[in-house]
Length: 630
Image (cartoon, rainbow, N blue to C red; front, side, top):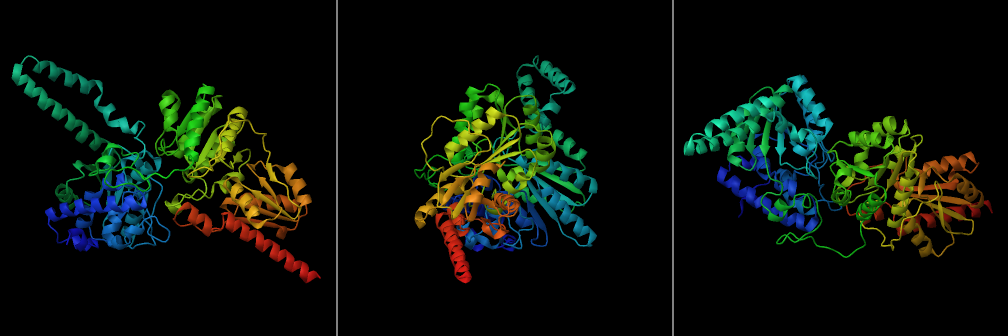
C-alpha cells in the first residue's frame, strides 16, 4: 500500500517520518498529474506547493487552526489531504468538487476565493475574531508572488502589520503568476542593492582582490555568494519589517524537513510574521517546469508526454481577438494594448511579440489597468484593455469615476463573458451587462460570432469617442468564414429573419445562433434580431418592432436582474405594452456552479432546445388565455 493510500486527513500525517512525507510528496505529485490529465485544471501552480501543503498540515492542527489560500488553484494537494481524495476525480466536473476552495464543500475550506490578493485581508479577519473572542488558534495565509502585484494584498499587509495580531503570511515565490510578474515590485530588491553606496563597497572589494592571485579568485567567489545572500536575505527583511512583519527566509519550498523545522520554530511567535519560500512552478513534471504559463491551466493532456489532447474545432474567440489586434496594430500605429496578468489568456501575447513597445501587462491590478489605459486614451491614443469579465468587476469604480464620468474613449474587451465552464461561479462573467448598462455614456456591445467581434472592435477604434465595451465568450467560435472587418452602423441592430408578427426574439451575442436554431427546430415564423448594441439600444427599430409584434422574448447569457431584458421591458412599458407581453430569458438570480460550458447552458435553458421550450410555453400560455376569453 502506498503512503497516499493511508492518508485521508491532516491527522494522518502526524505519525509519518520525514522520509515518508517525502515519499508522500512524490506520490501526491504523480496522483495530481494523472488526475488533472483527465479532467483538466490548474496543474503547474499545484505541483509547486506539494511540499508546503504537507508541511503545513503536519505542523498545524486543522480545522482548529486556519489556513487561507490565496485564489485556490494552488490547493489541489490540500483538497486531497483534507478528505476529498475519493472525489478528486470529479474535479471541476458537473456535480463534482470545485477547482477552488469552497466554504460549503469542506470544513477545511475556511475562505473561498477565485480572484487573487484576498488571503491576507481574510486571514486578518479570522485573527481579529480569534482575539476578540478570546480564542487560541493559528491563522496562516498562503499568498503567491503573483498576487503581490495586486494592491489589495498590500492593503492587507499594511493593516495586518499595524494590528500587531499574530498571523503568518507565507509568500510562495515562484517568480511567476499566470503571466511573468511585472512592475516595480518585482524589481524592488534589485533596485535597493543597486544603490551607489552598495556598489562602491562592492567595487572596492572587487578591485582589492584582483591583486591577490589565486587567493583573490577564491575571495571573489566567496564575495559573489555573500552578494547573493545580501540580495535574498537582507533586502526582503528590510521591506517587510517596514510593514510590521517579522521576516523569515527565503527557504527552499521543496525541502519538507526544512519547512517543518522553521514552521515549528516560528509558530509560537505572537506577532505578524512572514515566511518567504522559494518554489518552482510545475515542480516534478518536466513539461510544466519548462512551460509554466501553458501548464498553469489546461484541458486534458497525455500525462506521459504532456501533450494536450486536441480536438479539431473552430478557433476560439480569444485567438480571433488576438490575431485581429495584431492586424489593427499594423493599421493603427498609435494602438496600445493592456492586460492584467492575462497576456496569454486574452490572446494579447501575439500583440506583445509583434509590438512589444505598445503592450503593457500591469499584473493583477485591474483598477490600475483601467485608469492607466484611460489616461493614455485621454491623450488621443487608441487603447484597448483586455480583461476577463469576472475580473473587470474589480475595476467597477474606476470605470464609473475615471472613465465614464470623464467620457474617456477607452475600449474594454471583456473575454470570458457569460458562463465559462469548469472554473465555476468565481469566474463566470454573467454580471457585466448589468453592472455596465446603467452607467451613463458607456457603449456595451456583444458580437453574434467571431467575425462580428472583429467588426465591433474596428467600429470602436474608428469612432473612438466614448467608453466602449465588447463582451465575448470563452471557447470556440461558430467557425464562420472570416472576412475583412467593416465598420458597423453605430447603435443599430440586425434583423436576421422576418416573422408573422406574433413573436419577436431579441437575442444578445452568443444567444443569436441558438435563437435561430430554436425557431428552425419549431418550424415557426418569428422575427429574430441580433441586438449587438446592448447600450445604446436601437430604439427606432425597437419601437417599430414592438408596434408590430404581439409577444417579445429577450434572450441573453447574463443575469436577468438589471440585464438587457429588463431594459427592453422598461422601454416597452413606456410605449404602453403590458409587462406580461415581454418575456425575459436569462440567467436566474443565483450563482451558477461549475461544469462544462455546454452542460451549463443546457441546464440554464440557454441552448437551442431550451429556447425552443420557452417559445413553446409562450404559445401554450397565449393559447390558453385565448381559449379562456372565448
